[in-house]
Image 1 (cartoon, helix red, strand yellow):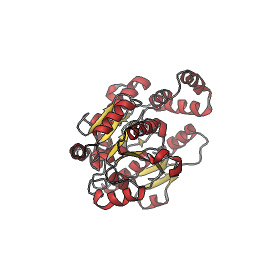
Image 2 (spheres, helix red, strand yellow):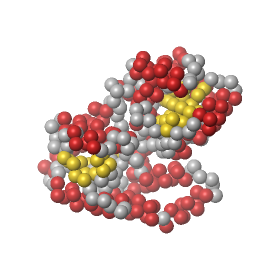
Image 3 (tube, rainbow, N blue to C red):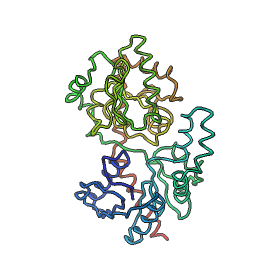
Image 4 (cartoon, rainbow, N blue to C red):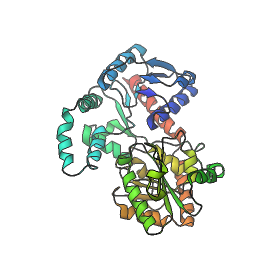
Length: 372
């Protein structure tokens, strides 16, 4: 179950798109319930169930619950949009934890006001009702994308530890590879106007504030004032003309269909996020052999060793520490060494391994039902 089965919509949608194909290829009968299907979903080898239009997220979850009962499946796997399921795997993590992290981005005087006003808004009330049903009622397994998310499930939602399984995201190490540099590095850098001696720092993000783009911009501007040859490329979100970007230090590309050529062109991937359950783009960058600078609020950072595959920030807003790390990474030999370790880390967390762990949970549920 997912709101939209469309690989163009985002990370969770793209992951699900690949996962249902893998399940079908393994010989399982796969039914997908969604309110929207991309046209190409006809060729995935799945049974599609189009949910009716719903005026709210709770209404959509109700419609999904009714549709599930008609299917009579062996296992119901929900990606975060409903509540009638055996496995609940919210790729967005804990909405309550994300709300708290978003409050930290506001001025001190505004955060308490938003906390008080949010329950009065229809959108937040709808989310609150949805979350309450997702973490109550029938027994189910909760799949957390990281230990951070597992902690949030226990702290914010009262889920018992024995009902939680931590399954980190995986990455397609064939699609994302250091070999892409041979094809794309020079053409993309020329297209973007990046000189060979410049350190190209990349971030792929739609929610710029939450993912730390403002801190990155401040840091790169500071380094350039010091004469450091650093450029920042932001993919995702709104595209801005070069004339709007101060002294050309930051390029805003807007949405991109495929970030792989950008990874090939980059020297460092930076993701100083305030909340990410387990960032897929960080895993993709690691697979491409890029040193990564991210924060402790990214579940993917739990897989990294600080100073080995990159650096993990304690405070995403600390431009001084971020600048020190980027300045260190001006050393090409160090980048190459870290990049090799980054690739090795990605190879230990492949997409297929990720899929197999989830399929094993299906078998766990089936065994429990047989025993009952």
